[in-house]
Amino acid sequence: MKRNSRLSSTLHILVHMADTPDQALTSEQLAGFIHTNPVVVRRTIAGLREAGIVTSTRGHGGGWQLGRAPDRISLAEISAALGETLLPFSTEPESPGCLVEQAVIAVLDDFRLEAERLLTERLSHITLADLTADFHRRYDLIGVSSHAV
Amino acid sequence: MKRNSRLSSTLHILVHMADTPDQALTSEQLAGFIHTNPVVVRRTIAGLREAGIVTSTRGHGGGWQLGRAPDRISLAEISAALGETLLPFSTEPESPGCLVEQAVIAVLDDFRLEAERLLTERLSHITLADLTADFHRRYDLIGVSSHAV
DNA sequence: CTTCATGTAACTTAGTTAGTTACGAATACG
DNA sequence: CGTATTCGTAACTAACTAAGTTACATGAAG
Image (cartoon, rainbow over all chains, first blue to last red; front, top):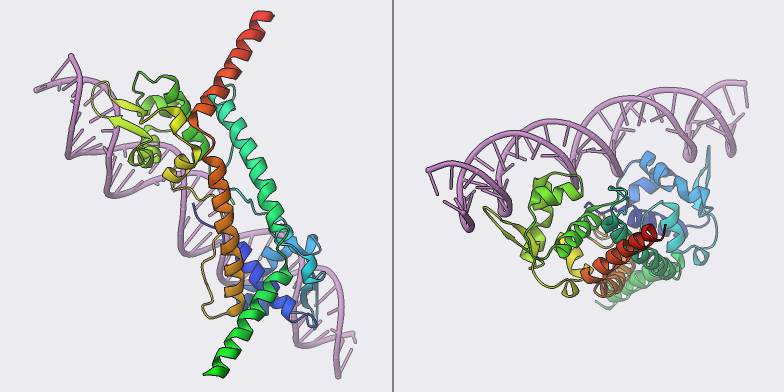
């Protein structure tokens, strides 16, 4: 199965937004960060706007900004707002009435429910602020090492 | 993203195989259980054969059987043998050199590694025998209730 | 040596997602 | 004003994936 890069692209964009909190970034600029098209960006983060994670303003000087402080935006929320599934397997019944299938689906659904709870719990402890902090740590390290050389 | 039903279909097939341990089931019969094509079945469970989870024999009277006892076949092994990814998101670098991307990928990879470890651990505690037991429990319940009525 | 079954390659079809074009709606600025 | 800028969104195209299908070679049983 093909893996989805929307979560990682979106986080990339959001960290850039967190890094310039005083100015709105246009879809065009955001698209530049992840080498894609402005329309793709708008489409992708439309769900984040509905979740209040980002705000958008139209017209001159408009663009995108974070909807609240980075330490109050968790990866769990972002993932949910993107409409991503944490677990990729489906348990749609395909042979209604087959007891074997019912048993398989029951066990798999139990597992999925518990797994989703667990993963969401963990993702809810990682915030955008953690990502920007990690970024700045890396940035400072580069600075120090180039200074030292 | 579209969800993958290969794990659940394969489990369905395997429970049927576990339920008739003394006879080999043909791809044709297995395909019937999940309403698909024999070739799709062979292709799907080819990986399970390589993992020793099932065996196949050709020619007259041939077909598929479990490679070992159901209580020694875990869902973790099955999932791995299918080549499924437990987590659907990718972290391929797309802007090499971008420190923001590096930070995002580092955090996401950490999360994925830990999540995969956790999910695999849980899946390794669920065996095919658990599934067949659940199936028989359901089967007996139906039997009892129709007897009672 | 005929029949049955798997193994596998090659092709077709369907469905999903990214990318693109186009244009309407809203906002700022002179 | 009205013009430039920017988002919102629909519609289309292209690329990719996975399932389904056909065909045939290989191997085993009788």
